[in-house]
Image (cartoon, rainbow, N blue to C red; front, side):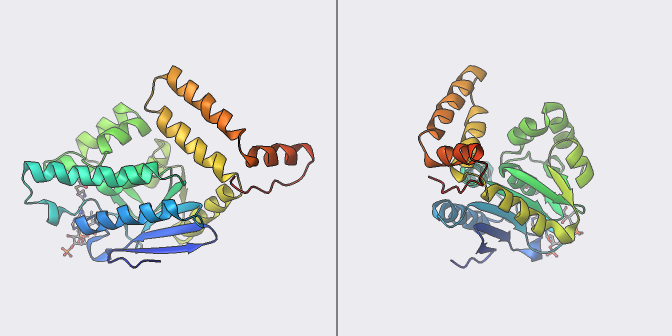
Length: 261
Ligand code: CAA
């Protein structure tokens, strides 16, 4: 596996754990780290040994404390737009990665940190996690997809409440509003994420990958087009071996042995 200056990638049992590793800046996203995330997700998407990806932050205090304010503070308007575009492109790479991505959120998930978590498929938070979009307190708006993904995940009213006030919310409130799917003790966060990864890995990877595609692409379409797309993908499932394996296993009361074909 490649070495990175600001991230660690470990692969075991079909799961890649990507740890964002700038603890001196609470894992804030600087330009170099964003480039590294881009490279990592390009590689992991192509690596057949990887079925599920977990994204987490180094240390116990912070998942990601946002985009790097020190790197951002002297940008002009044009540079600011390009900075946002880089973050948006990077996070789209995560969202569009063909494998499920689980965010294991340990501590602060602020600004770009909350935004990178929202680009993941499923979010598990440690009890110490804190979420927020503090940007308006810095004279900017969320620029790595936050205005769009937050509204889509928790509804426009709650997104506006969080973004206009810059209020931080704790893990239990994030769970209540549907921003995270599970809250667990910090000590068991990675184990919970890995266990969830194994649950997914036991299923048909082709079907999981198709489901991700149908959910994500469908969200960009009208209901009628999304239904048509779902039916098309549903049909594609019948062209593969996993559908035969899964349904034969049901009928013969055996455990399916999926190959992802
Ligand atoms: N960028 C750069 N450095 C950061 C950082 C960030 N987003 N967040 C923390 N750090 C650095 C601090 O500057 C500090 O470094 P020094 O020791 O060199 O001063 C170090 O990390 C530790 O941080 P604190 O001393 O501040 O730790 P704390 O426990 O007192 O506070 C915190 C923790 C509440 C998270 C606080 O660090 C904080 O408010 N950070 C900024 C959060 C924020 O505003 N994020 C949004 C950024 S804008 C954005 O993300 C825009 C976008 O959508 C693209």
